[in-house]
Length: 279
Image (cartoon, rainbow, N blue to C red; front, side, top):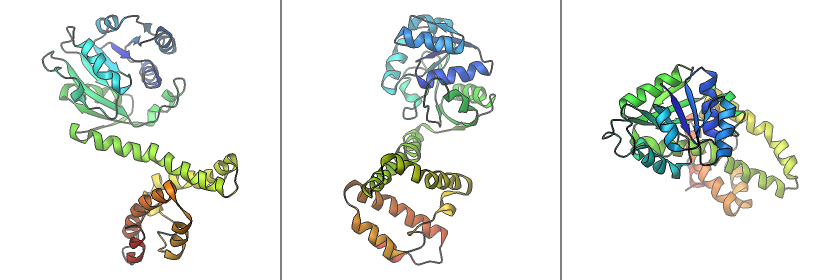
């Protein structure tokens, strides 16, 4: 199989370099700007294609690594050609393989592939992909092909039902982007207490990192600490009295989840009073 990548951003460059380092047959790149295309081709020691048609004809496996709102447009272009038996995927976490409308009539095999990872840059993110889980959903032939491709490089691959794609992506957002939102709110409160922003980050870093490490190692419920877990209503009331605006809303929303976790961790305790704080 000859793999062409359409899109030369952080995901496209990282996946391509990862494939190349594992001796996979990568033909090269096409992107909307030649600057990006040439960077990706040089980074992976492959070819830079000036026209989308050229990479389609040079490959029999296509990976679409564009922003989500461009996937359909790219597919519509690909679908103009004879792509019988092609293996085609996109890397969107939110879109399912349904975006490849008419693929069955073209006798092409399509799926979505999503690495559960936050790509930070083009140059270094590929180095972390060895430990990343991938999800796949789509038709059986494409799912089998891309599953074997990534498991062959040492990754774990989980198959999703297309109906679960939106919930899956929401879950990924909660544990990544939404966590950053909660942390940002906490940093903001600490600066209101007199810390500089730099001091706030440095002060909270051990607390953040230790909690995340423990949660991933022992489970979130077992790692839960703090006043809600201790059923310390007096302290929680003090928190709620001094908070307002977005910080209050975040504390209330997340607090409700923490009460449920505390009840799971300590089924012998009566959290009725605590629950009333988060109704």
